[in-house]
Length: 530
Image (cartoon, rainbow, N blue to C red; front, side, top):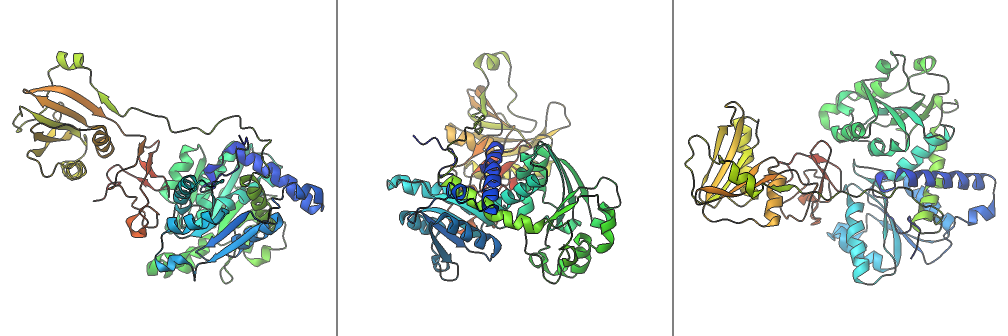
């Protein structure tokens, strides 16, 4: 059994590699960089895959220069077979699915796929689909998928080189970091990757500098908060420099105003001025400040003007060079060329199994007379009553939620009704759904109910009394339902992508459902198709 934990691993989001694994990767990058700069051939050769039959496929369905060429040069370093798929002539333009295309390429002895796409979560989807294809067909390898940028989601290999550059400029310490993120934080996938990426540092302080229209999406703010980051927000560089606690590391991203419509374009100059560094600001920076940028800079409106290029503040050029070193090491790891000496101290935590349907014991039912109906509702002799729906919401919100529950649970065609009432306190509103007649729900149906109506109670009535009662809480994972869908239209699992990728969600600490592909957060009422 191969003990190399990196071999055959995909990198779809930065969190696919643990903090410990990234620190190991950085130690190898440091070693390789020193070998390349000193022309230590023997040490460089210890990193090389050096197998002309090892297949790497670059599939860039969105324009790229630096990432694409960085990977190309990394592959050349390794002396492997590199193939490029042109987006202009590819099968995707003929309507072929991602799964069919990459399954076919997997069968042609390609072991690593580097993909850039506007479709979010595509690497995560293909990781599962193509691994199953390899298993079904007895292939001796599991294909690796490396995300080179997917829509507004993530860019994990850029995050690796960014983190390494911060690490390098932090005297190779991961104790703490104070970082200013400046620019288009709404569209910038490189800053979105930092929501989890910066966990590699023990203490993280992040200053977000962007006008409201370009501010960090709430999803990534929540992730940062969950990770314990200290977060501050400022509307402009001018506002940021008006206070005294200024970071010595600044990470800029270019504004992508072309994605935001005419209203934003009319304010382009105003928005750019908020996030563009000016010469007059130089004297207000702390000593030793370093600027970073994923590049390219906009040639007409660079947020880091060219007059800064020859100053010590320039960290973006070395950052770009570090990209090739990081990608060389990444390919060496996932191919199994290096990494056998790494022994993880903490295995990656799995999502715990959890019982989310709780049956009330029979002895409790027998001691307590259950109130399963409310004022104005005629008691039923036999049937099903769902109570405590959307407790505490407004009557309008409760009615809307009950309509969704009836649709999701297939109750619309049955006799019975819905009722909005107050609870035992006479003040708090709640919803009740009742359906007379003999009914049974299997485990899958109970899971659907828990997903669409967490906090409700389910009562089975026979002979005018409750014979079984269940309390539903929010399931830790939701999948395998054909009517689930992520609401992000760019997500691989959204119906607009026509990929038939099965939607999957994981519960967050804020009791929302996070898409397993694109990381978009949803309320429980949003994950089922309306």
